[in-house]
Every structure is written in C-alpha cells, then in structure tokens.
Length: 168
Image (cartoon, rainbow, N blue to C red; front, top):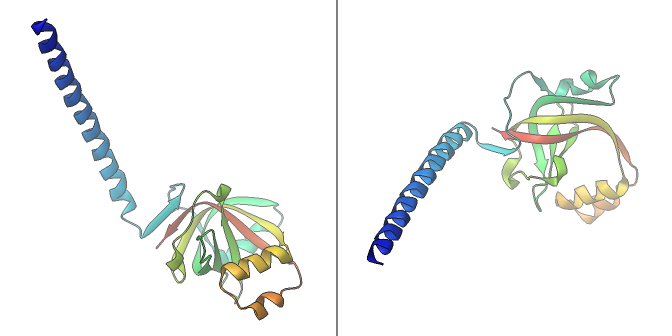
C-alpha cells in the first residue's frame, strides 16, 4: 500500500513539473507575441502586416467602379465613440470624415484615439447612413440636442468596416 502512495505522489509531482513546464513555454510565447505588439501604441481586432497602405484621402478614387474593396488604409482619427469605442471617424483630408465601424462589433478602440494615426485593414464600401444612425452617432459623440435635431437627411458616404486597427 505504501508503494502505491509513493508512486502516486511521484506521478503527481512529475505531472506538476510537466504542467509548469508547459505553462512556462506558453508564457514565453506570449512574451514574444506581446513584444511584437509593443512596437505599436495599440492593436485591436485582427493582427495584420501594415503593407501596401493607401491614404484615406485616395480611397474614393480607388473605390470607383467597385462595390467593395478589401485593403489597408491609413488616416488620422478625428473622433471615436465616447460610450464604447465602437466606431471612429477618420479625416479624409478635405474637411470631411469617413465612418469606420468594426467587424462583427468584435472590438473597440480606446476613447482617447482622436488625433492618432490609424492603420486599418478591412473593406471599403458605399453606404447610405440613415438619419436615425446619424443621430445615434452624434449622440455617441456627445453632440448637443440642437446638433442632433439638425440632422434631417440621410448621408451617402464611403464607409469602412475594419477587421483590425493599429493606432500609432
């Protein structure tokens, strides 16, 4: 009976050592992964390589003749949702802003994203934004009741659904 307990204790000790070793390897992988993430201020959503980047100012020209276009774009964040971080408006370089939402409502950006450069992977498309949605966005952005009430027409615009975002 004593030999059974000795074998059981030895097996438990060996299992604990094995599990600790596995966890150690997993932690080392996480450190490597996190060190890659540390190269940028913030990465949310899908991770991607920021290559073949198109400036937001050139997006409308590139989108002409296409219903949708999958690509990587870069622009400056003008504002973002101050309730959850569930959308951003990106400066188009002409005084206007493009709406960016996040795939499957699957991630959010930090509230302090305004003014940062965003590199976004996703799909550009033409969208008619309803009055109701425009008012919702204005409310999320903290606009006054007068500004919200002034929204009376839908807006046809180029929009972007990001699957991943790098904020610099």
